[in-house]
Picture 1 (cartoon, one colour):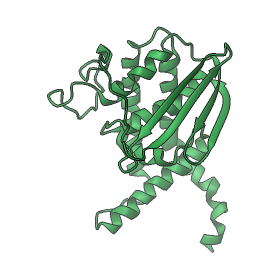
Picture 2 (cartoon, one colour):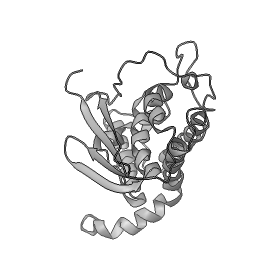
Picture 3 (cartoon, helix red, strand yellow):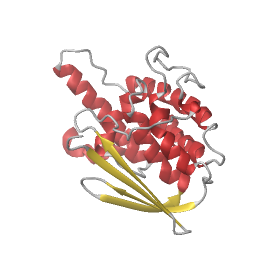
Picture 4 (cartoon, one colour):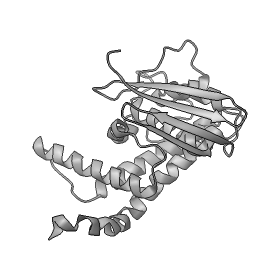
Amino acid sequence: MENPIVIVYSYKFKSGATKIFNLHLDRGSLLYLPEKRVNPPLWSLLNHKKCANCPLSERTHIYCPVALNFADIAEQFKDIVSHEDVIVTVTTDERMYAKETTIQQGLSPLIGIIMTTSGCPVMEHLKPMVRFHLPFASLDETIFRMVSMHLLVQYYRNQDGQSTEWKLDGLTRVYAEVSIVNRDFANRLRDAAKKDANINALVNLDCFAAMVPLVAEDTLRELRPYFAAYLK
């Protein structure tokens, strides 16, 4: 593992207990680099409550790549309720973020990293966001970043001589597929936990995924005055 991107999530509970997760990502591909596992749980098998839009074949993939990578983390939160208060500290190469919040809010961005960098063909469309990870982002921040990513994709496609789509229809289609994965993966997680922290963290993440295409155009209209210098 040569010079990986490292993102550290630390959860400090009121009891004094602390859970720390060191996430390593390949710097070139942003692929998640997990520690080796010996006994993946049964709920991580690809054919266990497989997502309706999953394009992977069980002949080539025994396990769901997201479930396989999230299994160890899910195990540590299986007995925790989603509304429990926690102080979350996120450390990246560039800076540190900290917030006192509920565990479902604090676990959502961590799940987001795993889901987008594990090799899921559907979630991989959101992977570029991870390179400039922003935990605890507001809806406006998320829309700004997602639309910026979408337009940058069009720039790269144009450079490569491929067709481009400057409207947001493509982004809407991506989020529609992502929402299906979020829904079905939450169903899979029900077999991985006794309490609701894992599931509600994913539900919280999906709320953002559902809201982005619904309010993106309105948010962009509100942001338009900020770009006045370019629109004269």
